[in-house]
Image 1: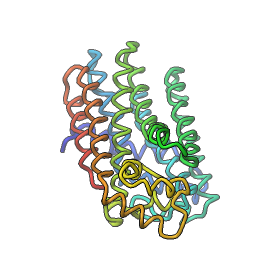
Image 2: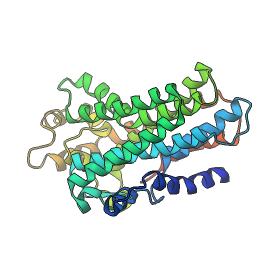
Image 3: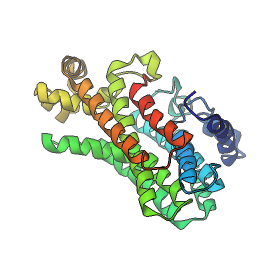
Amino acid sequence: CWIPHYTNKDLQSLFDDIRKELFVTKEELKSLCDYYFDGKGKAIRPIIVILMARALNIHSNRAGDLLPGQRALAMISEMIHTASLVHDDVIDGSDKRRGKRTINDMWGERKAILAGDLILSAASVLLARIGNNAVVKVMSQVIEDLVRGEFMQLGSKENENERFKHYLEKTFKKTASLIANSCKAVSILVTSDPEVHEIAYQYGKNVGIAFQLVDDVLDFTSGASHLGKPTAADLKLGLATGPVLFACQQFPELHAMIIRRFSSKGDVDRAWQYVLQSDGVQQTNYLAQRYCQEAIRQINRLRPSAERDALIRLTEMVLTRDK
């Protein structure tokens, strides 16, 4: 209800077009690639990209209608995101995603890796077809950031002061970079004004970080049936997210557990209890609110439009979602 009706229309045909881009002759590979493009996910990235593109077009004295390249970028953002999920699930050994079995659980790790690669290669072909070097450069940064972010997640910092910085940087690279750079890319197609590029980038960056902070909170507060994936998943993977890092300030016992990545017997349960006894969840939520306030401050610099208002309302949705 908060999305302008024509954005909904843009989205409906978007997933059909993604499936066409993934047209492969081998039937099994096709069903692998189509599996997550059923239009039943949150589609938060293409929604943001479409709204941003329309808001920027109006800001730049054009009609609001999407340019073909902007629409392609909405598809590319969802394709890169989905490819990264497929690969993440292999790395994490996950068996649930969006309330259904993961590709690696159903078809095995080898085929899951190939499916992720195929989605990524189709996104690269689509990106090249836009035919804008600046856009290619910006979107290539996303793929580099995703890989670097995954490497950062595999390691951790012993120093408590560095730990939170490491966490936020990893959060930017793994989640926010895709949203920030996709927003910047659609702005490049409509204006050469670097100030507008920066507004689009900063909105995407701040909403992206807030989105992930809320995700990290939901790992502690939402039931598994609600999230569509098991809770305490991050702790079980050895990851110390925002709520744990804040809780560590009240419960220094967590420090040793974080360093050993919750690998000793009982670590996950004890860490879970410490987080719930602390104000780690509230602090992380408060930090997410601060990022959303900055996103709103940035987007308010654009000319008023229904799309701009929808992007503002989207920040509320990011903060209040429960799955």
